Structure formats: C-alpha cells, structure tokens
Length: 316
Image (cartoon, rainbow, N blue to C red):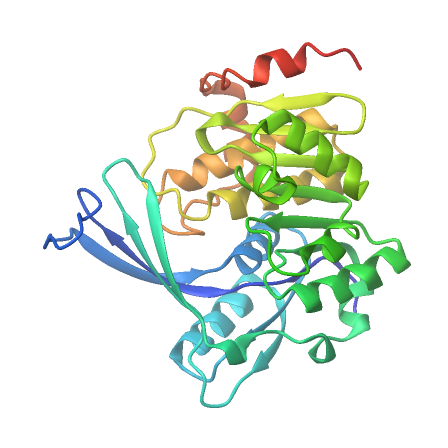
C-alpha cells in the first residue's frame, strides 16, 4: 500500500444545486433560475481539494451502484485521488438537493440509504496508517472512530469536520487532534448557552491539540489550550456557500502538512473557503494556491462577532 499525504474517511454526495431568488414559504410555488448536478460531500470534497493543491490523497467511503457512483469514480480518477470504495448492489448513492438563494446561502435536503453506512469491518488498517494525516466527519461514527484509533496508534494526526453530536461521537472526539466543528456544535454537545464556555469545556473534556469552530461569515475561532486564536472571514461576492466548510478543512490540512504557523493556516483556510463561495457547488471554486494567497493579501474582511474580541484579550 502506497503512502499518501491525506486519507479521508466519510461522506460523499451527488449535489443538485438549484438557484432560487428566495427560499420558498410553506405551501408556496416558485420558479428557479437553473440547476447543476455535481459531486460533493464533506470528506470527499476536502480530499479532492487537497489533491487539487498537489497533495497525494486517498478517499475511503461507500457508494451505491448507480450513475451517481460512476460520477464519483470518474471525479476521483480525474483528481488523482486513490478511491477505496465499498459499493452496495441495488442501493442509490447519497444525494442532496441544495437550494441556493440570491445571497448565496444554501439549504440542503439530503437522502441516504441506510445501507450506505460504512461499517468498521469494511475498512482496512493499511488504508489509514499509510498517510501523513487522517480526516473524518464522524457521520459513520463507528468506522471513523476505528480509523482514528488506528491513526492515533500510528502517530498520524487526525482532523475532523463534525457538525452534529451523532450517537457515540464522544469516543471519536477523544481520538481527534485538530477538532474543527461547526458553529452550533460546542453548545449542543456541552449543554452550554455561552459560546466561549462551551468551546473551552469541549477542549478540556476531550484533550485535543486544537479545538476550533467555523463561524461562517464570522470567520473561525480556535483554542490551543493556552489562548484563543481568530481569523476573520474574507468579504467576497458570494454565489453559493455550498462546500465552504469542506474547503476550509482542506485549507487547514494543506497548511498543517506544509508546517505553517496556526495563524497562517487559519488565514489560508478562510481564504480558500471564501474563494469557493464565489462559484457554484462544493468544489466549483477551489482555485490555485496562488489565487487563494492573493485573497489573503488583497481582500477586505468581515468584522469579528461581538463575542470574539474579549476572548482575544485574555492573556496566554
């Protein structure tokens, strides 16, 4: 088994992106401007983005035996990603209908056959340990936990993209080195209403190297056990926010494997996410490393949320 820079274990999806002027009200009937079918999915898109920037990559996941599965296979091959796919006969691959309004905000409707759940016995240790980093989303929690356990034993750093407190996710969180979650996750998991307290409690409980949360246009806030770090989001013309988080995680992994400082990693990640939002689809605007660094150098930023500034004043 060849060694790669990154292995990802987690979701894939075929996205149908539907552009509408506004989100429909209940019981209403509206038209839409256009629709585009393209590959997506949290981990799959992160892995493809990293490959796009020159990292060698492997994807581990599950698909049906339909046209969507063949679309993903072609896209992984085109991107140069080694795909370790478990196919399920007679099953439809994971699909998402994504409504994108005039501001670029997306609403996702997902459908996934229960047979597409990746089980621990369907993954192989050699797929995981022959890599410089492991990325998981936690959806198939048992398989992700086993992969993270193998990675931890082999000294492979584990990065996460987790947006919901799935059943049993606590066992996985204990194996994560760089715990990067969505905005609402810390409070939901820790039963806290105060955002900063929830993030600190999550870090203390699970002992991660870094605990961070993406905040959409609010940027990203991270805690390294000593102090908070913050990077503001870049103010770009938004077409579609689909895949912003996936691209952010790809940027984080890319910078981590380059040995960059945390501040530079966070800046690059925010810029990568911003550029992708300027185009349609989860992977529509990945851009080059030079194009992303140009955003860092020249693009104005959104203001930090009100609760962030006091946290940054806390001494290390």
